[in-house]
Length: 254
Ligand SMILES: O=C[C@H](O)COP(=O)(O)O
Image (cartoon, rainbow, N blue to C red; front, side, top):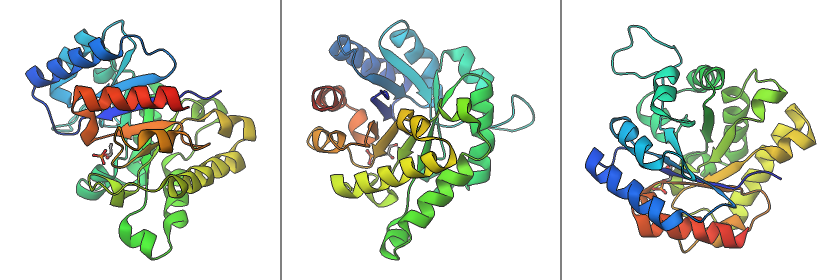
């Protein structure tokens, strides 16, 4: 059975004081959730403080990006060992905002992925097509390209440690969610790609999250799809009540 995981990507939101407040609220409201995984990914500046709040709770801690080298002259970057030292267990890689605004490519995602795995961080690798690509009928080509090249070179044991997040770019922060059928279709396609590259058993073990305007009102429908194993939540993860409702909605509906 693969794990159902709801992750909150706080993006460039929350000062340290605000992040502590949000983490404390989630700890209070979600302490009894045990059937699904919960992860929060604060901005770098708040990771240390949030780590203290979620230490030894059911809430995992992740970062939103990292560099592939362990150390060196890379101004403004942070590395996997630095994140590990702060208590991170996860790192988001290849988010579409990084691909779009910061020149992230499959090649750099792949290097980061290998460094994350080497240092024991669980990567959440994001893939997804833009509106233009979907309208041009290129969704599956783009997904194949992202999955194949971002995850290139992993052996059977390594691939099992990866979480994949399907995030159609046109659904991020727009209020336009993919329909459960549209999302399921792409999730199935990703799982089939994994099956071809590895085995059916391995493909069935990998958590594939959906991301893009996930809210308390649509989580149940999305999560009830066969190949949707959780969510990567942006805007709705910034509020205790809405994120807690998403987590609880996922728990009762899967
Ligand atoms: O990482 C999260 C996604 O980009 C989704 O963001 P959103 O829930 O604000 O649409």
